[in-house]
Length: 299
Image (cartoon, rainbow, N blue to C red):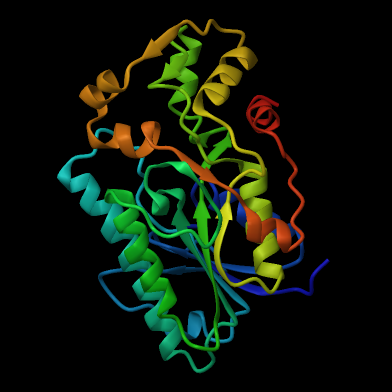
């Protein structure tokens, strides 16, 4: 067990943030959360990233600041307004936190800032470790700018860039759109089915962030399971666990017709992400296979 840490979290009420707060508090850490609504406890502070500065005393002397704030990419199809919200919500939140860190009497010791597998773009021929270069596309461009904003944190602050893959868990994440389709017997292969999806179980997404808060790791960290898995393996396992047929194959062109650009960015791109830095730092996965991660959704 690590010593008790003082931790500030932005994005604490989301799919990942909610269980993360619980896990950190269960480990004895003191957690302060930033919220856009009126605070309901002494451990909450209101903020309005992009509209007004954050009081620097909130982050001053913190052991860790964790930034998970950002509009959902699952609001489909992507309109121009949706894409603007995806970008600005992430950049504004990160810049607001970094500005407060610079203005604080004592800069935080560590900053764990969100990023995503989208950083790598569509890379079907590459195995992508944490030091792989950025790809191209809308999400890649957003992630590059997002990470650059985080990298401008104070010099004394340990910076970790959380390049999160497709999070598999109950109540949200990558599984959310698959479950209703499969429930109604419409489960099937999406596009070619051979594209690598950089999956991670929600338990391990949370566990990895806790691990990175407590251990001296810096730089980009791939938050993805320890084995590669193609999309067909994931969607087929969902159907098996739900005891539903797996009959359909939806061509990429049909997905593009319905979802536009988001089809290529979210479903048809291939990213063979490997969590080299996370494994080398000693993290042990609770769900080391994609079958185990999918099964956990239904436990």
